[in-house]
Image (cartoon, rainbow, N blue to C red; front, side, top):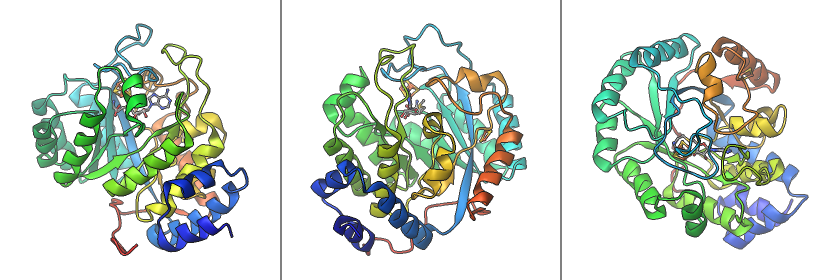
Length: 346
Ligand code: SAM
Ligand code: SF4
Ligand code: FES
């Protein structure tokens, strides 16, 4: 076995240079996946957690250069679901057996503390775990959402390269992004973060630093995905993120953060058919099937070639259930909070 993979599986620690060496080694991918799959089985088991994703608004005040929801994109058809529509989708998510709903949107400030807490209380009555992914808010807002029942928060750091971050996310501050993550941690959320793979100017050293940052934060969830260039954004002609590099990153994340919840993300499947099945066997243990209905799926157009835009939530539930069974795994029946088997013994 490659000596760094052996070390990672045994100690869950690698230096930046060791990480870079594995990321650049063209033959490490298979061995990394096998090792990460073993660590996944040991620390988080064979259950796969399904989180029902509700894309409730594509209105955004930010202007990230890679994202189709950016405020300066005039081509996107904007929408915002009503409270009744969101509650209906949450109810359906529950009926498909999902134990968690992920409420995701652009940075849409219509969803004030008052509007959102009202909604959270009602969803909580359905006995669902709630993950929010609404972007940057103040400490007080995060506190109010937590008190109203939010359990988890997803906020990707996108890249730990400060200069690259501020270039790609104009008007946003890297320091503020980081302090949002620490605030969420402080408030007792399960914190999810992650990065984009294949940003123009991103280096392997920067990806290695991303992994070390997630370790330092002791992230409970890490969602990563390849950049998929969107023709309606300034990154229209950027190269797509590389699938194999994304897969290696997932495996390294599992090796270095053995207890984390790591999704096989939808963007990966835009690059390769059956990507989620491949990634679930390379360290991942979560899938986020879409429960958004009808034309809203298409309109939540972060990037082109998004999968499932013509499918119904029921079709997605059935499809993903079949894929999970086909690899000898099963759909977990609990809410899927992060396990703490070995906390800080590694
Ligand atoms: N607005 C919130 C935020 O930025 O945290 C949540 C929604 S945002 C659409 C969710 C994620 O989509 C971002 O964190 C980003 O990594 C990803 N994303 C945006 N544009 C993308 C693209 N062109 N390719 C792949 N992923 C993309
Ligand atoms: Fe808005 Fe999030 Fe897209 Fe940035 S990534 S433009 S914050 S939706
Ligand atoms: Fe949507 Fe396969 S997960 S159709």
